[in-house]
Length: 307
Image 1 (cartoon, one colour):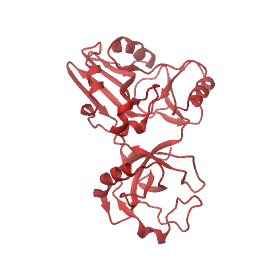
Image 2 (image 1 turned 90 degrees about the horizontal axis):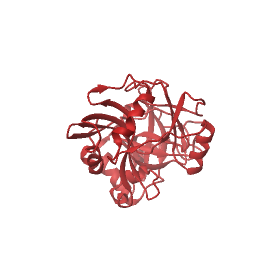
Image 3 (image 1 turned 30 degrees about the vertical axis):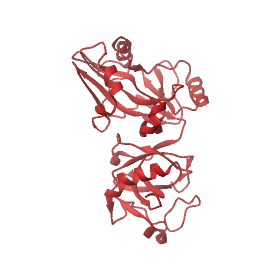
Image 4 (image 1 turned 120 degrees about the horizontal axis):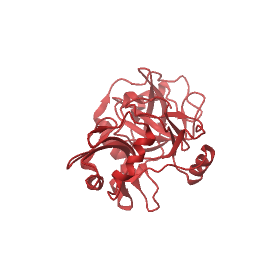
């Protein structure tokens, strides 16, 4: 079940507020002694996160399906998507799983039960296991928003307390408010540089067309440039995948690609997704001050839209 992006949180007792966690959304599945971690695009992540597997084995259930987020926590308990990406950063971070929903329990399908009823069962299932509970944030919508903004965290999720679990749907019963402007974009090309990549060319799908959004140079180290290059270099194609390139003129913020610059670029099959932070969308629908955060192996490229 997915959330709809909003500009402000709904107010009232019918809504529950939770922290928007900056990690990988995943189902945690326990079937007897067998544990699986499955991403949104159905990749098996089980082997990647042994601490979560060990904790899930202690769940107070013979079988259960949890919905939640795989996160990397720093010493202050703050989630870091960038740390989750890079093994070198994990030495100073702890891998954890935050559960926010319970879909099946000991053979019983709970998806038609109200959210409040499902969450009531969660603490009992998690007790003593080492799987963390995504707690409800108390207060009004305004109080919750301001508190999360002051902490510099990504955002807030609002959910109707009576909502059923509609898998794969964006029903409007779950809403997300982003306070840190970032989203996923599809990589359609790059400008070569000394470490493989000087800049990534990223975009989003509008219907079946891939639209250009930005040239991304910030947020990289030499190591990251080589790492991303190794992933996308084998996907090289001769034809530009962006439907709206070249541009007739350069963007004010340097984000456009003119006809003269097209030959500088290397195009790739648009199947790899990256998380990008930015300041704002410009009038010509490009990103201002875009910075690379990491690759997203849990998102399908064709589902990436402008949020």
